[in-house]
Length: 454
Image (tube, one colour):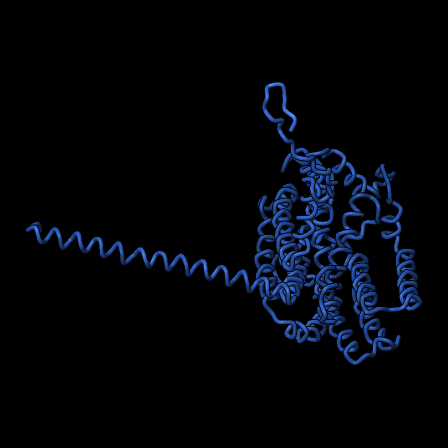
């Protein structure tokens, strides 16, 4: 055995291990992505996204309504919090409707489809009765409820079309009738065109566009063939072209696309000042309540153009946050519609998602100057109780559908069981500690009495 210079045996070194190639999941970024994917794929992800996203949008909308409407209220000789109080009251009522819709079973939602459609048609026809209907900004689509409270029945027509159309298509799918184009179109398309006609009698082109988007969303979910889809779309585009061409007001809105100057007669005043508000906001905005455009420069600052005031006061960070919340809400709705086995749930969830997403895109696109100004509010965000109430009920539908998923039901049941066990454990520990403490006090009292002390 060889020895070293000192006479001691040499130290045996362990053989080196071969280098193992690290996988992408071994680094911190890979582990973070893996955890995010697992969290994103959990059964309750859609439920929490819908509930949390809608509540955050509503609360942020209340803040921005209060900020954007103060000057308008003062100009009308009203208290500065006038519009905020009305919106807050509508949000409370909408919260009750959302909670009720979230707790309703699916069969009860289906039972409400036909009564809701009949009520919406009746109210939309009642708008055209002289002395009952009220015109606002040139559109006669309102009914006065007394005082300053008004209702817009066409907003409830969106919810009615979603529920009734989903129930109709689900029943036809159960009978395997959707393979025939006649059953796919009739009576869905004629009823939708009837609602569109009642809306257009009042001149509300924006709501008609949203209703058309809901119709196309239902047809697409029902598996309409391309030629049928293109045919219905061509008819809708032709009707829309005629309606725009015959209206000087709509033609002027179309001419303001991408405008950077108000024009000789200030025809593009609103569109241009919306861009001014966004441009002056910068990255983090001028501060909450510090908007300049809301001081009479930007019309409808708390309704159709509240997104512009948000960009001016909260900057790019605020607007991107709002868009991210809407994107999360849209993703959750698509996920609910894609993972369910119930055809009614699929059609209703897809219709609600199409409604909210299309309306948000049209509103934001108009503020950015990419689309014509259609006069539609930003869902859950803009001022307007007539738009807020049916939208919050529709959010309650999505929450109910997300809870109704078998995996989500199992996850919620497990969490309730764990919560109940924790409470029982806490009560048990408190109950166990209680008698011991009482016995100790009793022993002390008896000891004191035995010594003669009173």
